[in-house]
Length: 154
Image (cartoon, rainbow, N blue to C red; front, side):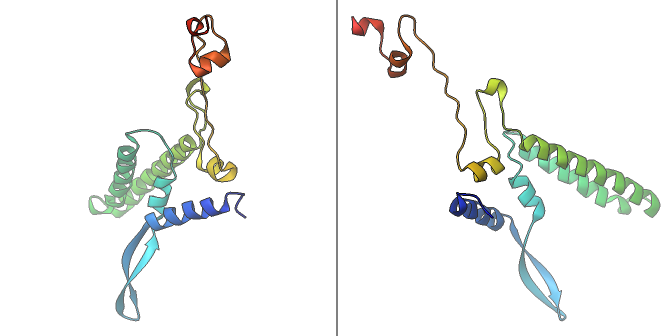
């Protein structure tokens, strides 16, 4: 069951699924049929929720690492290729889990640049914001909030 923000949650899920679809050709009854499937790797990358301008490059390198493991059979004996491919896939899964762990973090440096994760966004239907007020000398908090100065009041 979806929480109180059910409409927004459904819209988010619809956008995620639609953005992760790809068309593939499959054989049905001896004929090639074009069909649409959801690319689970694309969905995983979209849900990572990591604020870094290099995350896309890191995901690219990770999937290149996986592709190289799948390519091992073309470059060596079958027994050795299977062993290397297995090792590469284990590292691939470990790095994916590390990215998942990083994407679930919600507290930033000194709690001043907090962000919520997707589960929090859907469940609470709000995003946490932290405001820092700087108090001017000689003014109260209310005056500092409205930007008044002591001279203005005198």
